[in-house]
Image 1 (tube, rainbow, N blue to C red):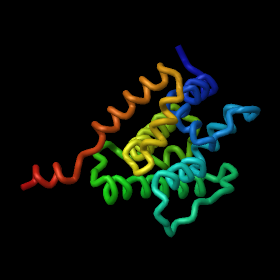
Image 2 (cartoon, rainbow, N blue to C red):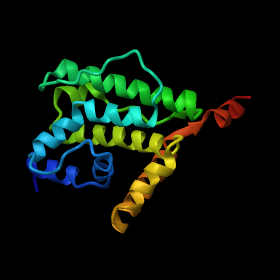
Image 3 (cartoon, rainbow, N blue to C red):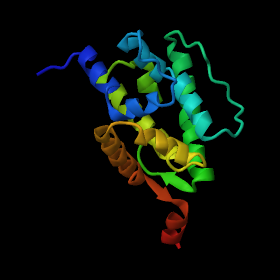
Image 4 (spheres, helix red, strand yellow):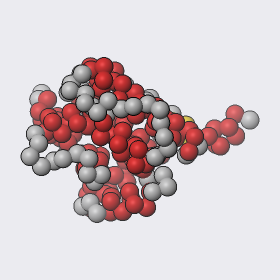
Length: 177
């Protein structure tokens, strides 16, 4: 059975990870169409704002706030996000990401494909991992607790998934000795 792009999009937007992102108030789910909400997500502006709440340390890279479906600007925003996430895991959390990083070129060039949605999911997983380990984790965990039980359980499962995707640098260094 073939699934249409619009069906994939609806399923993705109803996923626990996207529900979690909406707790930041950055994605409007009111009158805006599903495609608009999804494009706000993949353009990287919203996700970079969330990362800034998780890690407010200044960054020299400017996020392009008006992507207007420009592939280059989308890729640039997502590259900044992945770099910030990777740096946060290494420098603050002292962890190495051992999973393949999200393919920002795929997302940038063809954001509406199923494969791109899988890559966005990776991005959201890594962002969730940052959020539940950062200095403001109590606040972010409290937001998760406000969601329905099914969504909470799915997010806990995603947190465990992230835990399998990173490795403590201390453990990594000990295993090399």
